Image 1 (cartoon, rainbow, N blue to C red):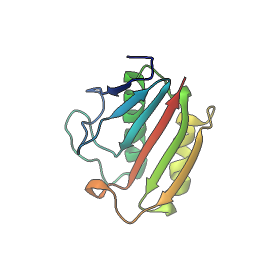
Image 2 (image 1 turned 90 degrees about the horizontal axis):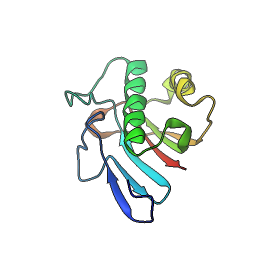
Image 3 (image 1 turned 135 degrees about the horizontal axis):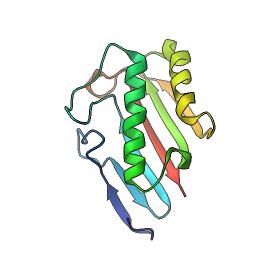
Length: 130
């Protein structure tokens, strides 16, 4: 990893491959920008559906893997952006999210959207810093 101001692509086989023309993450200086993750199994490339809590957990585990590949941990997350198809699931989402970020409390916005890639129910991206 380059700790200077150059742009470095970060990737790991422990998170899903990008499903479009983008990187899993970009490191620039002391910041790590992690692309939006949907609940895809890294090993199979299959989308997890039907169990919202498992979907959120998979997304957060995938994010954890990319953040680790970028030389950081979840404690370095400064901001999270969350897109959900159904804000009626917001309470369940917060319970799971709190298990990962309860002691960290990054900045966050959560919005309901009409549609996500592959018709996923949730997508989360994060920005990390050292």
